Length: 264
Image (cartoon, rainbow, N blue to C red):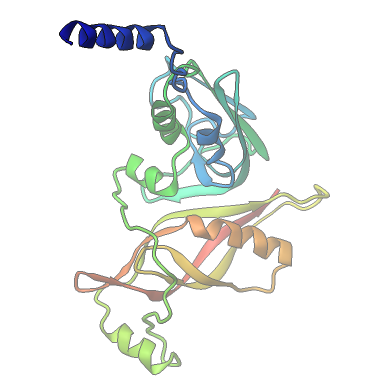
């Protein structure tokens, strides 16, 4: 019986060794599904956004030469032979208390490519992209301003200091010890389809800053064209505020603000 059991065990081992091999796992390099998630996102292209093509090599330093930052929306993101290539549409000029970009030109679209990362895992590619193409929150962190407030639902009621505001909003306003403070903002840009109009001017608006430091229910003042209003409203979700507080507790509050609107 012992000899028979040993023989069966040896047969099982040999069958496993000679049987079909397991399929190889997925490659360790970047995958197309990871790069596609960037499409539609609003981010900030740092350093060289006054160029129509920006090529980032793996050997380049974390901070590229140049002082031109531009707010963008990702139009397409693909892997070309394993290398990330993103087409970005310029939507405005980003600003922060410690950041004032200086741009020599304002291309409508910019192609960003990363080379040397073809065999790297997605996490490493994402880390590099976050340096060159950060979110508004990441842009603030790059300048030493922490912002870690998660997005929450749109507030139904917000504190107000206006005498004609509803009673509930005025009661909430009396609790405020500090009102919202602007941390990051984007001055929007609009491309005139006929290329006949060039304009730069201030536009006022009112909105609600949520307890998460984001803008809700913006109302643009001034009777602008629909296309111009759309260009302005497009960038407002990128804005970040230190929210109003009642002591240490954040709470939503009405604000009045202004921006610089440019037509190219």
